[in-house]
Image (cartoon, rainbow, N blue to C red; front, side, top):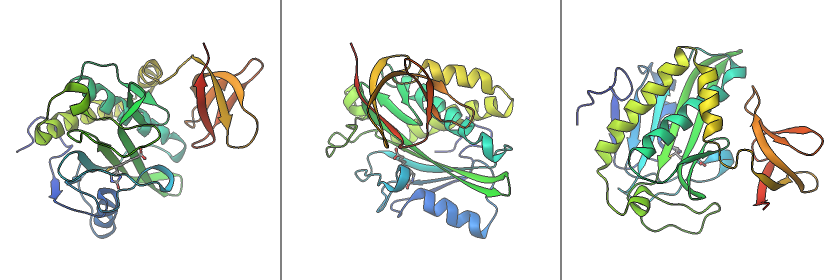
Length: 255
Ligand code: BTN
């Protein structure tokens, strides 16, 4: 299907039936050419899809959206969390068009519905000094898959949530439009607006909970924000603590 609803995202679209990982193919393409901004690599199946921090991304064949988008954001290394913000919001907002349930963003960038994971994002950046050279936005969205292995958090799909099957190409086109719309907001310098929107959809924002840090004892607190580097801020009775990826887990909510 020709993509006529965007200016640059998905104008060049390389579709594959099977790849090791769309992020890996995007990286390979970048190593031997200069793909135009918005180039998309999409696959119906991945033999070794990558997840966050060395995990795998499992997806049944021909069922889900698995794609990577190449961007050249004009931002410095210390600003890269802005990419997580805009992309999470773009996918969250897009998902709301297709399902009636509230959709939340679990920091840093899991897309959640009813405490189940609908989509995962893997942003891989390459730097030249302190400047971002390119960014690969890897996006995995569970669409028509109806059965999942036991994951933590458990997985869900649009089909399970809406009780209907979806046309993947139609979804892909509207996803590109949402991503472009949010990327343009970032480019227009609307990061404060995006941060506010991100917090308004943040999973467990300002909810009292028990947290387990990777090092140390469990503690009581509530998610209070995200700092400029993208660390998760948790307010306790006497201080605000900042955590990087995988440095803390929410164990349970407090009544
Ligand atoms: C996560 O762990 O939540 C991130 C998952 C990201 C999965 C997507 S699927 C398309 C792209 N290619 C990959 O190998 N990974 C990302």
